[in-house]
Length: 278
Image (cartoon, rainbow, N blue to C red):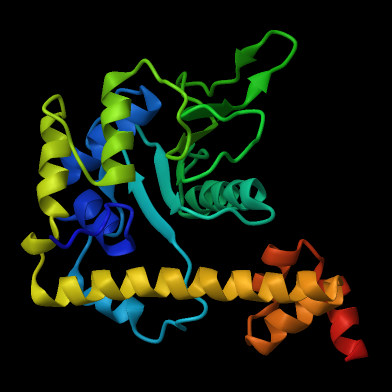
């Protein structure tokens, strides 16, 4: 029986942002954050036509699994959800960058005050070695008083929730564990909530139409080719024993400077110096 995991780009967007399925998105956010939220709405609902247009022109060797979902709540909170199954350099810094951009966008959009930003990042690895727990919550804290800093409405200015699918450490929250199991394995138990059961039905491969089946499989292929290509370039560089070799390998793949920075940890200036010596 053909099965594609819910972490697939198309599958995740479809189950979380399809019209009429907002309650699934809201449940997932509330289970992860522990916050009671009202009227959670995706800002870019799933539509197969738009998905097809976005997929057109994607470079097979440039694809990576970063599922971005943006949502708003009645309480005036902006929420970002990312699905990133593979780790790269500057990972947490990029999370912070996305949050800062969202924070600034809310102000430039005409709001009199900045809107709180919540980032949920689902990974298949521990972002921080010292924090291997299934769920890690990071906020703006008064270090002296060990107290979260809140806005005038009693809301957090910002929070990051790291959901680790790889860890085997226990978590006491049964609802959270059900979501983790579903995302990691694509299976559900008899204890699963209605929201997870409905999400399971949405991403059942045989409930997709023919175009969605094709695209879901294509995204699986894109992910596999991208990371195999990246690993090959890194192995080539390791054999050369030089950063220059790594940069050269990525250049041969026609990766842009931004991707080379991400995978080597070098600055744009350092990369440019290497390019100038070739």
